[in-house]
Image (cartoon, rainbow, N blue to C red; front, top):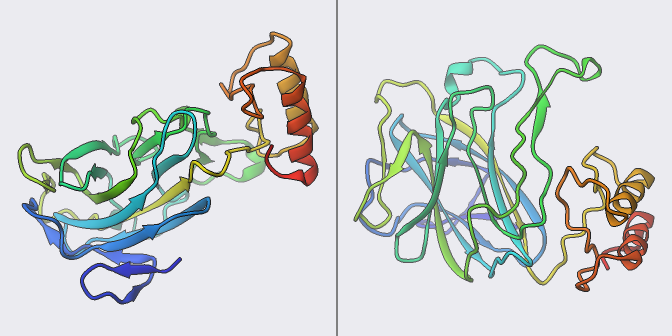
Amino acid sequence: MPLVSGRAGVVAVATALGVCAGAASAQPEDYVDLGVHAEPETLNLTVILTSAQAVQWYRALLPTLRQEGGFLDIRSSWPQPCPEPCAAYIWHPTIIVFDAVGRAIAFDFGSNNEFQEFMLSFGCADPRPPVCMLREGSMPDEGQWLCDLRPYSGQDGELSAGEYWIAVGNSIHPVQGVPWGAASTISPLNPGRRVDFWFRIQPPAIPYCDGDFNWDGSADQDDVLYLANVLAGGENPTGRWADYNRDGNEDQDDLLALVHTIAGGGCP
C-alpha cells in the first residue's frame, strides 16, 4: 500500500525525510503513515535524516499480536559492501516504539559492530530465521557470511490492537516522562544521515507457515526430513514449532501438513 505523509496527506516515496529534532513533547505532526496491514507484508524503508539529531516518525495501526499468532519484526540493515560514501550511513541507528499515548514500550540500537543495526520482534514466538549477509568484499561462493544469531521470536512482547508510533534516528533514546520523547545524543556534526530498514507484519488471522524448517533458504524435502526427525525426538536447532498445523499435537499430521505446503498447497 502507498505510504502517506501524516501532515500533508500526500503519497510519499519509500525514502522518508526526517522532520523532527530533539525531544518531542506531543504527538508528532510530521510522520509517514504506514497504515493498516491486513495481509502478510514487508515494507522496505529508507530514512535520510535532515540533520544528525533529527528523528523520523512512522505511524502504524497494528492488529493484536500474541505469542500464539501474528507478528511484527523490524530490522535495520547495514549495506554490504558499503557504497560510497559509507559515512552517510548511521553507525548507531536506533528505533523506539511508542503506544497511542506516547509511552515508549520498546527500543533497540545498533551496537557499532559488523551489523550496525537495530532489531525488534513482537508477537508470535514461532521463530523466524536470523539475518545473514555477505562479509564486505567477499563473493557468495566464498561462504564468508556474517550471521546475527538472534531469531525473530516475539522477544519484545505482545501488542494489543491499536495505534503505534515508531521513531528512528541516530543514537536516540526515550526521554523519561515526556510523551513521544525521543532525543539524540549524537554530535550535530556527525555525518550519518541514512538508515535502511524493513517492517514485516504477519496478521494473526493468517497462519505463519513458512516451510523452510531448517533455515537453509529453501522449502523442500530436507525440511520434511528435519521435521520428521524432530517429531521422532531429535534435536531442533531452529526452535521452530513442531506443531505445524496448530492443532495442539505434535504428530504425523504436522508432517503431512508441511508436505502439503511445500507442494504448493498453502497453509494448513
